Image (cartoon, rainbow over all chains, first blue to last red; front, side, top):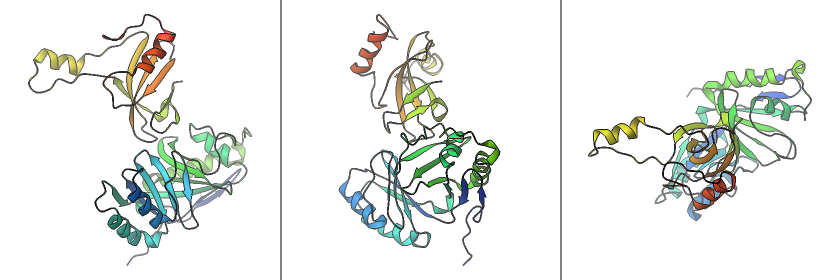
Length: 188
Length: 109
């Protein structure tokens, strides 16, 4: 079998913040009734976390679950375990009105860290990224310049950004430009 | 700049995160209706100066359609509400009445 390769093969840029392509990540899109007990148990079994509340992400050591919309979750699992987890999830959801799909290879993931991370992201997204407004554990789907993207902030102050793989290069260049030392605004 | 709060995810979304869906609460005329009715349904839209009810989609967010009541001259937003309704809920109408006494929109007052 051929070796799976992430969109930018670990490209990185360092300026007022560090932008790194995070490599391969296992992702499952799950749609269904988020209030259902069966679905909650299936999510817990697959990711080890409870279903997060609106606009939040629940993280475990190896993955987690993000709230995408009132009837959609994004489940993060190790890349090599996606197929197994998906099969178990599909079986656990038999009889539920729900659908789980492996979207790992449709996505690219970036990590944005450093003192200027909030500023870098605020330049390209219409989101209030001040420390009071956007706290750890928060998840947001939004627009990143001209493309759709989603991101969350973890306890370590690192933003994880998810976008479509087809626009990975665009997003990397966009973030690198926004993180360029000469473009520093110093607003946050 | 227009900022609408999505009633589904609670995000205060800026205009560029949304997609406009035109006039709200249309009554659809399809097979079996007269040509005049179908013509009006397909082409005729309100373009009021003042209170307006519109459909919007939180396209770069949770992806849901919702309704918004706003003023087209001042961009003031009176409220947003669920898409699963055939007419504005009373709370939204009251909010409009508080700001624009005597308003009317189609057959609503």
